[in-house]
Image 1 (tube, each protein chain N blue to C red):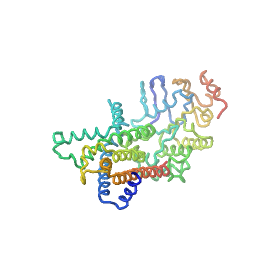
Image 2: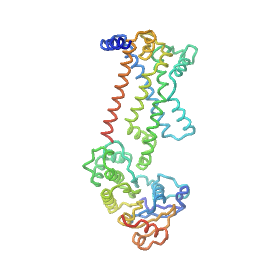
Image 3: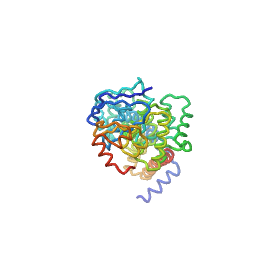
Image 4: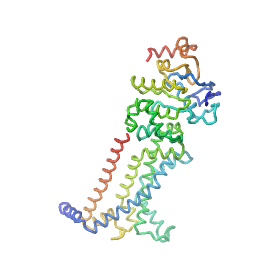
Length: 228
Length: 232
């Protein structure tokens, strides 16, 4: 187990103000906030792509590396087949049976029939599902998702959300950044509300939307209505 | 004048006139050797400049971009001084031989290949870096992944080098000496024959030169198109 993940007075330049929190296994966590609030930077700090300028990030294991994965807003695919993209990720992790596991991961996201298509000619929604398969192939304990549906149309968004729900159901800890309130309600158990680089509020989803404790969160919820 | 020279030039080409063929073959041998060596030097240099972070990197990039426009005669002169009897490499006795011409053209096009490679790698790196780090790819492994992924763009860089090498006169003229049957290539022959008034040979070589450059670029275009369709 690499969870819980502890952030101890973590800050990043002037984008993230010193914040401390603990991410536990089980519940799925939504990082909610407006554009520019610091959601993406916070996720990158947790995932390890950025080093905090202050404070410490402590996993419950020495090498959390491949036990946690991340899916970005815009998937970056290599110029090779869909299957080969997943195999590439597995090979880096020195996994045996990479081809078989990769195909399983593609089946999981409903892309097995496109396995031999070049990844870059797939549609945006298919590429994002491929990115999910690539992150999922290693069955990480924690999956970070940075606004995974921000550039997708409604039907592709639904497909991606279905996959995320399936990952959640299989026991992977979901940590997802979004500014989409409807999505936060559909997929989240708890909300971390970020405003101007500060963690303003942390609450179960229901309570957060019914009764936000902070003025900022209340304003954000009001401003974002109607639900999408 | 053109009306007389043009048919005569086509006649030389059609007959595969031996002096013409010899010149074309030497030209290709020199330029292709230079491109091969310059590619082996230029690609790693460009990739290192794109990905590495070290003091003086920006100055090096500016220098490299400036060297893309290096005048061939100046390259010729510098290589001449290096290879001449009194020069530091004079003992090798390379001056006025094809290897000297290969050296001069290599010096001329390493900056072109390296600078174009750096640009291509840097653009790709910006797109890929986070994703590759997230997947756990690091260092040389990540760099090779990116290079392989943009291999068709790198082909364009190499062809730009080949175009430059096969078209320049100044450098090969100075270090090769334009010796008949030994170091005479297409461009130097065109310059010489034109000044002597033998227009058919000059024009014939000109047509061959343009044909080669056109064919190379068409091939590169087709390869890139096919790759684009195939890999996206």
